[in-house]
Image 1 (cartoon, rainbow over the protein chains, first blue to last red):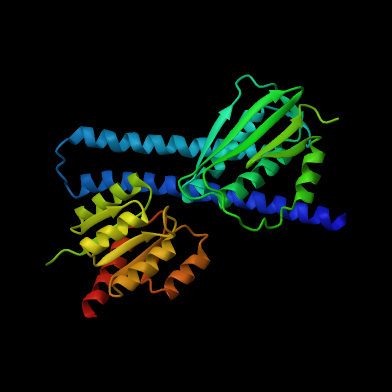
Image 2: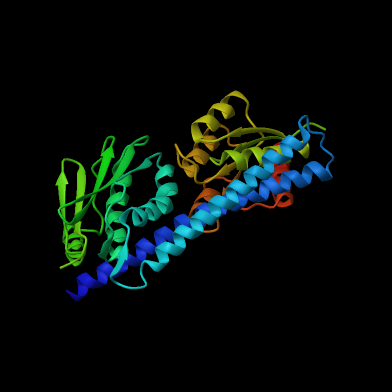
Length: 217
Length: 125
């Protein structure tokens, strides 16, 4: 049991590490775009470039800088919310928001494998009173596994719905799935995590279905 | 003096376009590509002197792309673009024949200095 908990803790740390790596990589890209765009405007002024479409070209660059500052801000907001999910073990949360921030932080990682992450969230889904950090950890492992197994140019749909006092999260791969070894996150560990949330996991063809009660019993 | 022919490869379209324009203002001849296949197409048709290659591009891994480029023409010099967490990839890239690497966000002066050195090496070979 001690060993199982230790493995789980290590996997949670690995999960946080992965999220931080994806986040910093993305932020670095946005900062690079902002820096090059500002640098280009500086060059146009310093090197006396005569643009065909002068204030228009400057405005376009300024717009791109503003847009990337906005994207950077969004990502910081997601990371901040993600960090606070661990403040207390049980809290009231909106499952769509919780998954949205996870998806935002993993989009880059999926895009690099040419896989698009798509949300199909039920609107007005009831709030949950459970462990949001543990739920993100669980969903992350299924997303990571599917991303590793899916062929390039595939889609991965994350769907939420409510049914009989539970929230159901469906992870639906759309594309060819390759067989690879399932690393450290064994069925036993998945079971351990989902039991802590009071829910269960089932497989419907290639679709993973996670059902978690709104409040753990 | 003839222009140095540079190919910029990065999936961030706006980053590539802004950087390309900055290099053009400094009298470099610049082509751009946003993925490995596009880059390889340009390399076969219009071989550049120096390639600035992001290590994380979709389609084909940056390191694989580097090896393919070096197999096609070992004299084309490649400068790797990287974030600072990619130490292992940088080491592997250097072993696979990259000329240098530069970290994002880049300093334009540092980049042009590396491009010039890489071009100088290509001309000597």
